[in-house]
Image 1: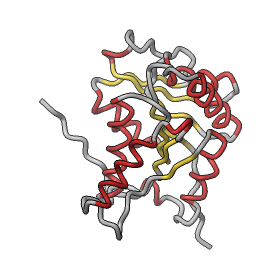
Image 2 (image 1 turned 135 degrees about the vertical axis):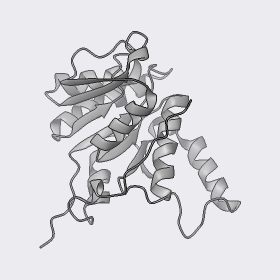
Image 3 (image 1 turned 180 degrees about the horizontal axis):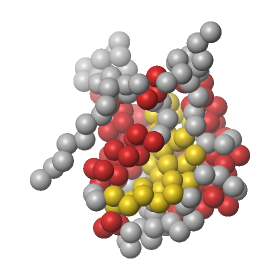
Length: 206
């Protein structure tokens, strides 16, 4: 009998700001606690502010395991989280993203800014190019991601996304739905397949 894949670690992308709605902070805190309760390691950007800090703090305080990965130049700006069980300091953003990818079994995007959007879209692109099979999910709390989801629909309707191979993006309405949706997505996959995809090469930019 072939063993099925499981979710052991989740990379969470989210804002270094709290946003203008209390529901954003509440959702980040709730997700951190859920990851701790479910025994899923949190992989994140290493900051101690905004939704990043709230997610990590909640996970750590609930007894969860936290790995923060942060480039040197952001340690002061994003106030590197002091309670991470593992804090990895990288040379640049490219190394940070590579390590976050390698250590995660899945990717989750909470509300955030341009950086969060860029990281999310990059993972979706790699899935489209068959570079990995790890699930990618957005937590669409308070309809935050509705404009992006509409844009993806527009891309498909206008022929820029193949209708026979639509974007592989999971959507959860709240924090409680995140882990069940991720586990359901990887359940049919053979054990080891999440890390058996071709290596993702992140080119260094001058």
